Image 1 (cartoon, one colour):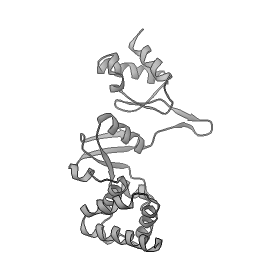
Image 2 (cartoon, one colour):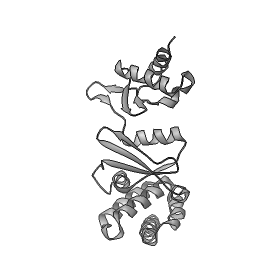
Image 3 (cartoon, one colour):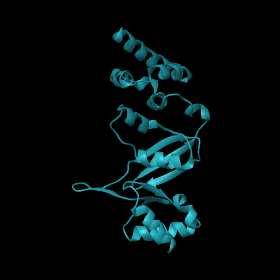
Length: 205
């Protein structure tokens, strides 16, 4: 049984919608052998090549056709493979929180893994090495809020932005974690978030 046949059997028995990496099949051969096997399966249209070393076992919908993974799903899968922590930053963090309607062409994550760029169609996922301090928050929401506000800048924060953050924080069950995390944020961000937390507490009182 060839390496390609073994890998094909494993993939076709797995769940559709899975992202696949060359390293997932390292027990069946060296990097080049596995890469060539995956490329052959892509040529047979069993899997789709998303980017260098990244493949996708496509999930389909009768009306929409192939349901491609989002940049966020790809970013999380790469982080899981590399056993790295990541957090969205810049305009992408703003978009995830609803502070911006634009989906940036460059999606940037801070990471404690390797610095790299991954081209996905006309989008680029960028992983930027950062200090452990920027990834050590108890709540992922805290990290997202801090990174979004940092990139938006203090003078550009509107009342609408604050109301949106109040909605998100109000629906969260991590208010106490956010309160603790925000102590390590820049002073102006700390003031905004603590005021929102205070207003939420008063409303519930």
